[in-house]
Length: 189
Image (cartoon, rainbow, N blue to C red; front, top):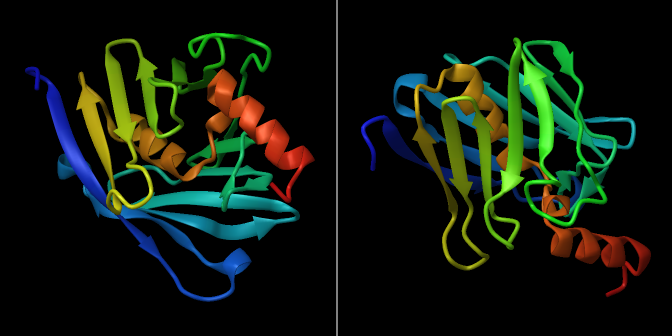
């Protein structure tokens, strides 16, 4: 790890009960940023699932979108940070992972959230001077997410990166977008 790099592990949790109402998420300590917890669905807003991140030392951030795979998807996605709505942009027709990145601005800082591999479990949130890489293992390989912080990140940076672990972001890769299309058109597959 570099001079300004920290690594944290968040444990996955899941409730029991009916499949569509079963809550799940990640929880754990992020060092100086304190204990955090994501919850999906924290609530339903019409047909949308809402993922929420809570913690004493981080701002309240939420993401809502059409449910897909037990999480809100980027389709009709809405991000809020400390109660303020944040406009989202992405190029659905781009062929590269960088071109398909989710882009937004919070407090005058431009962010990109992009896939770092062909698989949908490896993501990074970047702004000038800061990159936060999240890695979620494949099914059966563990019940945790790893968060690696590079650069002088603040509580908002970390909150956004951890929140997005609770969002279905398969569409950030060309292959994931194709798979998502076929699962929506042919749900019996």
